[in-house]
Image 1 (tube, rainbow, N blue to C red):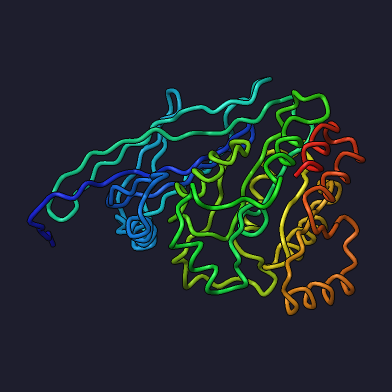
Image 2 (cartoon, helix red, strand yellow):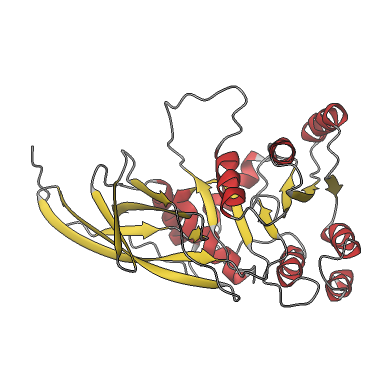
Length: 340
């Protein structure tokens, strides 16, 4: 059955940052109506709230075909009921000595509300440097971005009342992660992956925040906010486990440093990954939060689990001293953090 509107909606392909190696290729994206959401440093409070609300109230295009062009090869898939698509296949793309981002092409042809559409987009695929010595996997909310997840009113203010120019990083954390990205010789280009339970609806918002605050560019792996009806085993640790599995399986020769906080299940997830992939986890840094109930829950879990790689930190400088002592970056970042 055809449906009709009085006007033609603009529809876009929104690709998220993918990643690849000679072993695997991974890219997600979404097809949805374009609400012309822009991010401006000087946006009014009203415009900021409106833009943030529109991100959450997306109008997706379900069950339409998507074609991916990689060099001379085409791959086909279809969007799901929420407009998402995924391309995941082996083998992937070759890595080079220098870290790079490679563009691939996406095209979709379909009918929507009685109108014919042919839309396209370029997607970025991350190819880490072959000289990388380690990898970094970090949470976002309350690990690098002050979100106040455990404080409801502050969470709402941060989520809807501030744009990405106004959001604050936790003190010094971009300098710390950049030091690890550069490595002890300042030229390692160790890859950084941002894995968060935040919804994919705010991908552009978070990617912009990371750029504004000078974090190393890397894939931003978020979750499907509307995912329902999928039964999992009682041991399933969610979207983060899935994405971390993909990263570790795509780069089997890399060992990783993990960053998280006590607000959610980061300690449990990372400890589980440590057990699942023996020898692949170099360290786990968990940021403490001033919240009595969550701290008590963490302490009870820690006492029972006794995770050997996990360090609870109160400040960025505290963690950076540890990573410097382990030989993972130079001393310069300690001096910068000590000045803050």
